[in-house]
Length: 287
Length: 198
Image 1: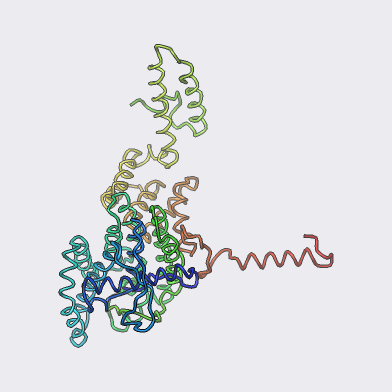
Image 2 (image 1 turned 30 degrees about the vertical axis):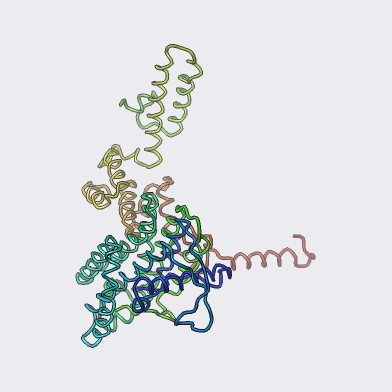
């Protein structure tokens, strides 16, 4: 369920684009610093938004420098240093990655289980550390992953209900971006609707594959054909995106506003427009 | 508390206009200006508070469409409580109580509150048809239509809160292209044969 929340780069200022890239690279470096090399393989774009929102609310401006890395050993890239937002994003990434691997393990056949098992072995230390850092997040992710499996086992055919666990996970994660109760309330609702959008986008993308492999998909359960599924999923995503945006507007952001605005109003809208089409660079495969 | 209609000297079921007129007249009567420096100022203040409370209650009921529900099933009191439940986050409990109201589904407020409870949970797919029915039953209620049209417009691609609304996304009522075409056609009509007049 990763990699859906990205900016529409063609509408960004060069300065903003560099900023975005620096946070992305900063997140990768933060993962390395906190959890070692294996955890850096989990990197994805969605969590950059968490770092942007958390640092945007606190007003913390991380130091930016140019560094080399494994992915670009020759040219130096802009990389931002540590911040509370990046730390939160890195911890959440490890936790989410861990639970996704567990989910893969439960869903896939014996041959496919081998890479998942291997990855789990490599990440076990990182997961322990992250769970210790963010016990509330770990608890929420764990409970919601179980709830998701229960809904799937029960063959839930209501898109609203099927998206509940994803909604609660992202709601809890987004709420962790601020210590203030008033902000957290807004953040929860904002994340909750964003989680729904991601769930529907993912379900729409996997629709045909799930049909072939006779796997659970909420839109298959609702016995829709591809055309019906696309228009239904698009309407759902649009509604939830609208509610996410109106919630987000109530946040007292001190930094990163143009970037987040682009991600929500343009990047996400673009993604919804391409709903059902496979992404060009899919970072991680959902089981 | 006294009956708000009685406080304002009105018959039950008075119209919005009548309520406003009665309130204005009474507010003028008990205005603080009339009692400045008077030992009875506290009495006047109290009357004023009563009038204000009665006015707020009646206007609130009109705005939320529950005034007509007093006589119907459930009653305004029940709906006010359910509204409070939803605002406190107990959406499931609110839904349970709504389901228990016999014949409630024929009323605008009932449908609106069902929509609200689902909306609170984030179940927009379920909320939308209830909002739609509420608007159909009480087309004059602005709260109902605001909730319904915001979701409906978002679903159609004019995502709420986004300054980039109206991006082409499937079927849309009116687009920039439509407007350009219309303007060009108008220009053709005006300009043709007369060298342009607009």
